[in-house]
Amino acid sequence: MPRLTSRDRGRFGTITALLVAALALSACTSGGSGGNTGGPQSPSVEAPAAVSLSITPAADAKDVNPAAPIVVKADKGTLTDVTVTNTAKNKPVAGSFSADKTTWTTSEPLGYGSTYSITAKGVDNAGKTAEQQGKITTLNPAKQANPNMIPAPNSVAQTGVGVGQPIVFQFTYPVKNKAAVEKQLSVVSNPPQQGGWYWIDDKNVHYRPKEYWQPGTTLKVTAKVYGVDFGNGVYGAEDRNETYKVHDSWIAKADGNTDQMQIFRNGQMVKSMPISLGKDSTPTHVGPHVISFKAQNYTMDSCSYGVCQGDPNWYRSEEHWTARISNDGEFVHENPNSVGAQGSSNVSHGCINLNAENATWFYNNFGLGDVVEVTNSGGPPLPVYDLYGDWSLSWAQWQQGSAVK
Image 1 (tube, one colour):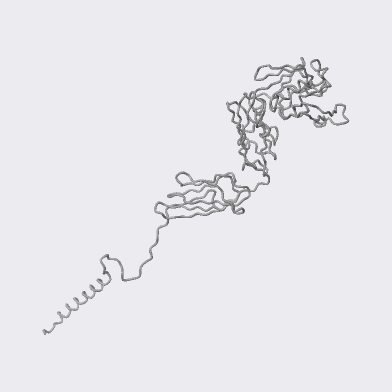
Image 2 (cartoon, one colour):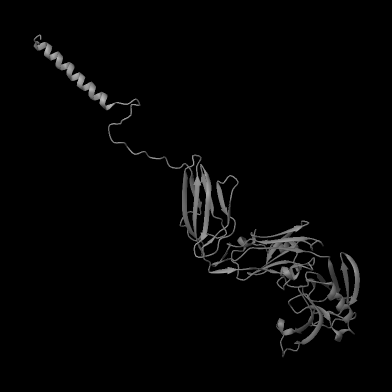
């Protein structure tokens, strides 16, 4: 074997070192894919779902108005399930999805002073899911005011109302924020007729048209006051939706000069009858009156309007075929004691007296909302606050009574 020179030994060492390095590199990079199979693997991280969910009102919101809906929305995906539950009652709240299932909205109002839990689930286009939860608490009013309606809708459902009938909301607590409440009240007439609201006081607001209602008119009356702040810690207790129908026009025109009352139906005079109005010391109010109550038999007591026993003008009597035309003790009714004066002089305490036949006819033909116009009585105009003194004001004066300017 030939002896290696020192130069040959140096070359051989270099080749050997290169070969070892190549083998080591080959061991670290073996495999057709070129992946690292010789050491520990890093765990893979799945990308989060692209869909994002939002709840309005925001989670943990306090004093939420219960009239405002809960709305859930999905961005970059769709909703698969939404539940809203009254936690105290364990009762679900109804709601519905939009057509594209990107929005869900409650379809019934929430309750006052209640807590609701919300769970929303969604999915993105890749099938990845997401979930969002929340909890809200609604406001708890000190008092709740009901919007009572006059006349009571069920009392006139069969008969309808007369052309002079104002629509009245009588609230069970005073209203401080009148404009806010009035904006939530509406009367839609068909055929359309101009009308407006007038606040008689802090609890009573009336609606009347510029002129008497047209016979056959339908009135759709709405009060969307649930959740409305009335002021002083009072909120609306409920919404109301009612429909009234206006029947034929019945207008009686009572003249203190002629002591006659002419009856008009839909503009045509159908009857005339002798009357006796209030005497000089107790004159009948002048101007339009509206019938608010009827009774075949009724006890009339002047103490009901402040003239009580001991006063020389006090009276208490049983009357028949009565129709109230003001809260000041004025009625159209039978009075056999004044028959001799009917048609010739005014002797009553302010009522319109008729004989038995005419009183019965009047009672059977006139109803709630029908009109009695009094002229030449010597009395003052019926005050606007006297139940239905609405027509004593001009249209310009009436419009000043609105809280919405």
